[in-house]
Image (cartoon, rainbow, N blue to C red; front, side):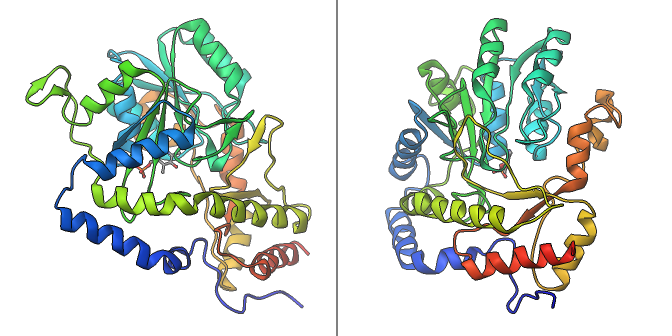
Length: 374
Ligand SMILES: *Cc1c(COP(=O)(O)O)cnc(C)c1O
């Protein structure tokens, strides 16, 4: 008999995370409202210190969202028209969108089919062919770090900056080092679907460089190093104090939620059978935080529709590689340029992985997928 979900299993259930911490969060929100200090005050500074410590970085700078964090990081590098920034075509749009918004031109390198992250060999070939690349944005996709050591070595050799997009990888570890503390800068999102999610939008940057810290802190407030004295042209991208207060409560639970995600991931990987390809942890990965648990399957869209019919939520991150997006047609790429990214965009499927899932629910999802393939 085919497994059917007795109760719908959504891809993500934020209610189940919110319920047990509701009183604690509301108390902190009320404190901020009663203080009437909404800007970059004590809550935001407190969160910045806690995130810096958590990520093994010297400094953290709050901003309005993860997309802004990327733009701010790129602005801090003083890129000139014609400068290029290397990233991947298999990521959330913001990674490459930020490059265009900063005035630079995105150039892509294909990803590794096992880790979904930038392929070191691909990156090297693109850097050799593109002398105007001034920065590189490896994305730590789904909660696993990119292979940072060789990437950092290539960047240092060429004098280019490295921005880690770790929106999906807070607390992920590469050879024991935390995401966001390895490159020149790291960018983080607290969008509600991330492992540490705000009650709205929020973002942050990390860096070990005091000069960059100062500049980023200024850029998020229109580039003013002092009030009304503008050294650079920035924009308004503050981290709201109410969001900071929510995030500080949630930070206390983050490691517990991560452990639960890891348990769910292990169970899926034990239960799912061929032809399902389960996600792999690279040898250098010492902590995968599973923002997403992403399988590769044939007949992906049919499976997704079937799961939807029986009440199981899934998602496709990402169905169209960025080099094939209409807005990037001017970059001159064509279908076939990044075969791994293109193949993944047809095969990947994200399953429910949130911390509050029960063992039975994970078993139900796995059974339904195994049954689909007979
Ligand atoms: C979510 C995300 C962003 C953007 O963050 P926002 O806070 O939504 O602006 C950037 N990069 C990646 C890889 C993301 O997953």
